[in-house]
Structure formats: C-alpha cells, structure tokens
Image (cartoon, rainbow, N blue to C red; front, side, top):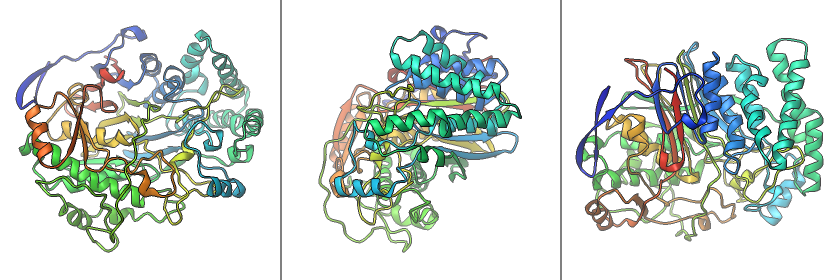
Length: 561
C-alpha cells in the first residue's frame, strides 16, 4: 500500500493507492479502469481490447505482441473511433537496446498528380468522402511492430480479434474476418523464417489479391487511391523528437503529428515554479494555458511532413527560442491573438498577421488509445484512429477514413497536399524516461485536445507526484485558441477556432474560475471528460507497473501480478 498526496480544490488529500491486478485468464468483465502489478499492464479503450493485449502477456508475449493484439481488437471494439483502414503512430521503448523509436503507421495522400490537382481546384472534402481517404496504415504498422520488436505470429495476435468478429452480427464483421484469415493463411503456408512469413502476410494485403479488391472498391466509390498507392506504402521507422524537463526525457513523434508542440510548451514552462503555484490554482492554469497557446501557434505555422516541408525543428526546440517565446507570457492577461514566433531569427513574434476569423469547433470523436508495458521493461504508446466520419466498410471489411482532410491546399503552407505526402495529424502518443529507463506511457483520444490533456496529466505526475489513477481523473482544462486540424479550408485564418477561450472541468473551484475570467480568459465549464486519456507508470524502485484510464471517458486498464 502506498500513500500519495495530491491537491484538488486547494485541499491536500491523502489518496490510498491499493495495488490491483487481475488474475491469469481474466475476462473482459473483470477489467476495470485501473490496475497495478509486476507482470505487465495494458490500458486502452474497450475492456475486450485490454483483455486481448493481456492475453498475449499471459502467454509469454512482450509489449509489442500485446500492443499489436490490442490495436487489432480496437478496430472492432472501438469501431467508429478506429478501424482497420486507419492509422497508428506508435512509440516503443526497446529494453534490450535501451532506445526509443517511432513507427509511423500513417498512410499518405494519393500519388496521382491529377488527384492532387483535383484537390487544388475543388478543395479537400471535409468528411464523408472516399476522396479524403489516405493509404490504410494500420495493418502494416501491426506487422512491422511484430516483425521488428515482437515474438509472436500474426495468427496469435489476431486470434482475439477474430473471436470478436465471429461473435458479431454486422456484415463487415464477417468480411473483415475473411480478410484477416487470408493473412493468417498466408503466414502459415509460407515457407521461411518468421520475418518472411510476416512479410508474406503483409504483402498479400498491400500487393496481392486483397489490394486488388481494395483497388476495385476505390474505383467504384470515386476514391483516388489505387493499388499502386498500397504497393508504395511502408511503415517508416524514425527517430523521435525529445526534450528534457525536470530530469525526465519526453519523447514524441515528429512534426507529421502535433506532438512536438508539447515539447515546445514544456520548454517554456520549465522556467516557471509550477509546483509552487499550486495544482489547478488560477496562476498555474493561466501560465500553462498561455504557454500552450504560443506552442499551438507554432504548430499551425510550421508543422508538416518533414519529407516535403522544411520544418525548423531544432530551432523550435532550442533553449534560446523558448526563452524569447516565454517572454510573451503575461502573468495577468490572457492573450487574444494567435502569435506564431520566428525560430530561425530567434524572434518572439513572426511578422504581423491579420486577425483570425473564428469558426465553430468541429468535435472529433474518432480516436482511441493504447499503452502497454511488459515485465522485461519494454513499453509501447500508440494512438490509433481512422477519422471515418461518413465512410462505410468495403467488401473486404476495411473502412477507410478521411485523414487527408488534415492536409490543406494553401500555397506555401508546410501542410499543403502533395502526391504521397503524409497529413499533419493530431494523433500523438507519449513516452517518458528517467535515467534512461521508461517511467511513463500516455495515449489520449481527442483531436486537437490530445496533447493539451497529455500536458495536464504529465504535469500531474512530474510536478505533483500523482500516480496514473489520480493523474487521469484529476480535473483538466483546455483552450481552443488554435486552428482546427480537421478543417482543410485554404485560408488558414478561417480555420481558427476560439481566441482566448479556456474550458475547465466544473470541479475546479468557482473562485479560481472567477480569477481566470478576470485575467481575460473566455471561460466555459464542463462536467464531462476533456479528451480521453490512458496512462502507465513504471515505478523505478519497485518495478510495479501502474495503469489507468479515465473511467468517465470509457477507458479501461488491467495488470498482471
């Protein structure tokens, strides 16, 4: 038993943390929103997906095996938030090599230049159109994770998903089960090494008869994708973006996600005594919010696929730039303007921009979560999604999303659509190490709110010592002072959501809310969850793995003894 203090509503509370774990062979019905143990842990969306990952750990699999099983199951249990035609950015800590890598499970825009010209002339459909579908990345991501880091076969990790599909009633369940069994059949019948078997299964999807079926479906539905797009796809293995904060090293995916802006925010915040300000005090909420606004402005100005855009990442994360940007934070007044900086010239502000045109925020409810740690010290954080608003499953059971709408057609913009370019997505998992060992894994569903919520719960742990079950349930806050990442409008000023806005959980005291209003924040409150987080903490002293997901957001977690 361990006691951990944390503050809510200004009162010091002693929270009793009981180490909870499920027994071997635990059913989904036994899985709740939290757990702790030394045998490994999974936190994700639906309990059946957590059970799928846990089963791999029970059977001797590692974090990569368990994460792959969880992700595949999420495409069924969390359908609508994720689908097998979706995308999965993934961070993995390899305990053997003691390194963190990024697996980019994100498909790109069509390769056909004529398709790109169509977007330039007609605009990118916002949703409900197969013309906004990128190459499906999830299957290749799963196979790549297994091939590079796992120990199990595709047949083993997909078994829980097939069981779920066999119990389902929709036609797409049956069709998807047929497609997945084709991959299992190919893996099983291929003569060769484990890697060759996995590659053969993967190639049947991206280069074989399944790709042919997808090609026919694309043509029938007016999509721009073709088999040649599938054949060209591969999951890139990349170096993460990282910074240090209070002795922790925070790892994020590159600027093809929004992830690096979390690092920018932390670089600015490190100079402030946040712990002394007090958890959820008006000064604390104000300072964190103002730093987020500045980093979000840089996100919207500079981020894009670095294979196509010259993103000044080193300058954006430099100490010198953080210092000049930090100088813009007014301790008494909330900013009402979007203020990108100039990292290459080390100027706090870019040349004057015209005022933004506020738009209604587009709610995004199509992402889910996955974090896994095993008993050998391997840790995975992944954020699966599909952005499938309005799209329906095809004959193969695969549903394509609308992620191309996260690109734009704005001339000169780093996120402008080009053949084969990856959209700058909001999906943004997080890994954290200390003294070279993994301590935290975080995944959040919630579009533009993802890294705002990550920052909330990361600071809850780093500054205030909260374990996951307190960190993910403590009151949160967010701002809409940014461009909408799902609005492809060419004039990016028109994508701006809400200047000076600040939404807080209603459990934050009325006195604090009034003080924030007096500082100029345009306040609103909510009783519901602000985004949907899951979190794992590996205690470096006891090696106990603590896992939790916000129960109000329908998250689940479990651990093995």
